[in-house]
Length: 208
Ligand code: 5GP
Image: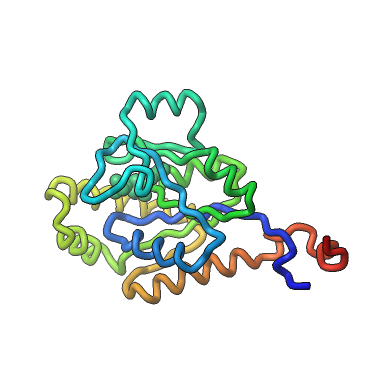
């Protein structure tokens, strides 16, 4: 029999990065390659940007809707980022785990610290451009933000980097292909830890 008949214990893959870190491309590439990983669509009170679609990029809610969900304990974690609420659905994570699926999520450092207080098994990856100068130049080149917003994002990046020790892995994105390769390999190796499998000995000798 093959090892694939031995059931695995899924975990959450947390990806955090300052804006301009190349996060969305990397996430897309990972999701294309792993059919056992699902993307956790967050809820937010921020308004949709550009061609963002409700239920695909985010679930867009108003403040009252979001606060009602907080009351109902529907979020595994939530945070206020740049003046808007962002939160992760507890139900989605639970049902994915029940189906043996891994979950990848794009959340900020505050959210990651909150997840550390839960029982969820986590693999925490921080993505960074090679240096502060490059971060600033990527933000300016995007042309999507005002000068004030860029300043705010740079300050947040500085504060977040001070908490880097909470993460398991750092991937420096100076070359997109290499960064994608690194993230995929981290996930692949984490999936193969002995501790991720249930009852290997008995499953091997007494397959169902
Ligand atoms: P943006 O508005 O640019 O899509 O996201 C702003 C920030 O919110 C990013 O740092 C992103 O990682 C974070 N974020 C997105 N969804 C969540 C979430 O569900 N929880 C938390 N804590 N942060 C989130």
